[in-house]
Length: 134
Image (cartoon, rainbow, N blue to C red; front, side, top):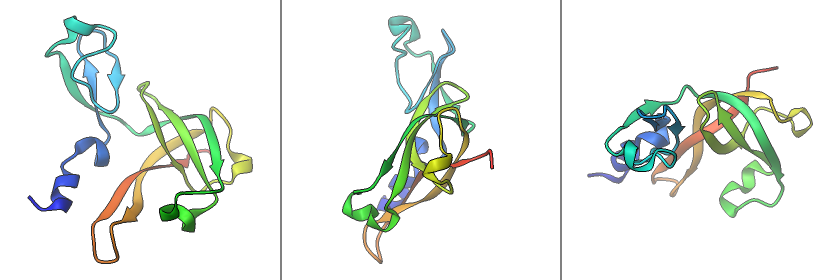
């Protein structure tokens, strides 16, 4: 299987696929095989669940000294976002000024380029969040 296809087939990376416990209804991302709340009762009762991608900022930070791969983005904002379903995700917060960001800010997930292996290599995409309240 070609490498780009392998990465595209990891559903949680490109489609926001998590899991939902049929026993208690709790949603997890990334997906889990067993619910930490229900434990044994959730065995074979976890179903795929696609997150809507909307949520709000729980906390955030400004990155001034990034990893070398992200130097062109510096400074940038990283946020922990709680989705409407209750799952928490970490990602870049884009199209926002640090002065305007605050906990409770409504955001939506979008797919954007995160990086690439080389100029002619594999391109990595992932979640980034942008504000809904403008």
